Length: 551
Ligand code: AMP
Image (cartoon, rainbow, N blue to C red):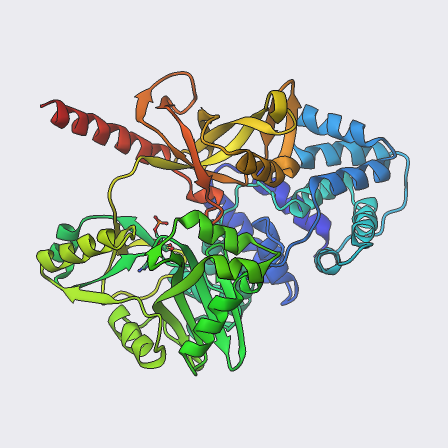
């Protein structure tokens, strides 16, 4: 497939508002693709380059792309940035600039889809001192051969923000339709493989290939997630349930084969290097080849430490030996997804737990199994007394469903008034903080995933935290106007507040009274932030509890 044909398809999808029409367009493209093209097309159309399980990064930041565009279009970098500010979209800007250029150049080497993919892989693999320069040259080569329309989508793919409205759900439906297989089978294969490209290839080969998927060691699968609920409802619905402490630390997925092990974070980043002591602990806890799921917490004098100290360890790149002494890390293992070549996610939780207990000797999260509300409530009280966050209640007959926030895992914890919100803008600080961002604009999301500004947060930061936040955000600035900057959303803050008020000051229709920065949630992504619907729920609940309080 020519990259031009792929670009035309993107253009068509971008102009198609209806989801069903989009599915139709994609499903018609898929059968004609070769085995090499199919996975690339499927990932590209979702704005991804690598498999979801991969922690590979392309390593092309906006600045590098602007510079390459400037060189190809024969203009200054500032001109490129001006065009982006004017169009509000990198892709459109690159397209405009290339169309001016293409009036003066006549030579094009036609770009091929798989060739573009291979070039991007080569770019991702460039490492070392000269790599920035090499990457720049490679991006220049690609853009130099691109027609304007191709430039639009190349630029967006390189920044991993294709934004043509094609989500994983649509692609799942399109794959099912194209190869006449059950969408549930596609979804199930995706849960085990965590790469829609590979899933499409199996779908093409036939439904039995999808049915026989196995989890692969060192290809992390998405974590199963929890919803809120109550002890009473869970017992009413399921009778005997399993309750475990809810540890306030960092989620991990540990893969081990023989003497080789890796550990992945909730976002599936490889964090093996940051946690050698935890790797050692888990290696010695079992002789088997396993994938296990758990939460690592920090402990000092027998008491769990705040979540922040665990995160610091996850992010740490230097002085690992020093950090090991300061805080003791304790893994708590609560699930098993793979054992000695066998994929276990479809087994009921009670059976997975049995296998887990038979092969992992240490660090198992204790479990209480009961249908008696008093017994489960006692576990909850014990959890809080021991300094944990609350409890998790799990349905014993349920499979492990990667990436799903279903009703089979329920979290029970005291109501705390904090929200996880996306950082979308900031204002430069003042005085000694003038070189840092000072106050931040944060947003929740509506039902369609659109970000909706909710509040400004200017308090609760230490100098150290402001410096850290600046480092994390400085490369995400997409616009500057006076003291105001706008970010490409990437970072999530947990924000505390005293009260939720109805207000027209922000688009969300609410405002936070006394908003206060609590911490960076670097275990959460933008799609995980608070929704408008749940804000409305909170607002309602707040009104009823205030009434109850007032009598
Ligand atoms: P939340 O992040 O508030 O949605 O709560 C779900 C998270 O609780 C999971 O992603 C885990 O990181 C964490 N967690 C702590 N203890 C457990 C447990 N026993 N079982 C499952 N998840 C747990």
